Image (cartoon, one colour):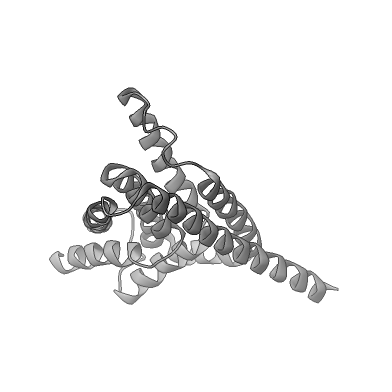
Amino acid sequence: MLLDIAKGFVIGICASAPIGPIAILVIQKSLSKGHKAGFITGMGACVVDTVFSIIAIFALAAAQKLIDEHRELILLAGGLVITILGWSMSTSDPFRKVKSKESSSSAVSVKDFLQAVAMGLSNPGAIFVIFALFAFFGIGPLDRSDWRVAPIIIAVSLGATFYWFITTWLLSRFRKKFRLRTIIWINRITGAIIIIIGLVLLGEGLFRMIFQGAELF
């Protein structure tokens, strides 16, 4: 059992580590707003990873079938959401609310959290990463009555939390070395990268839909 818990912790770290839209978003938040905003954003990604882990451990085969049947729609919807978020990031001013009252800081944190959740849920690549990791480490599918489920899921969440805490803390240390203009450009560049990722997903979805439709005729 301890081995399964250790595997779950490693899965949480490995699921968070790849450089994708979420990682780019966390980097941008950490550099422009600091450790708290970056970590809250990372927690949004952690929630998504936990949800995907629950799906993987209970219904890997059924979820895989559902994704395969609706891959084009998932790519289109995910690409659209990621593109919009990237555009919002690249055009926003990260220092617009610097002089706002402390009472508004919690709202900003909630916004960062929800932004990460939306991006994570709309990224089909994250789903496949979780599935692949569970398959690689030989975990799942398990029965709902299996008592090992809860500790494994908690371990995955702790692994992701540990990764994002360390990552955002390190990034926030470098934040002090950047000038305001540099951080603004980091916002624009990371936003542009996320837009490109979204457009690629949209393009792949359209490509699959067009050619799949052509094959039907």
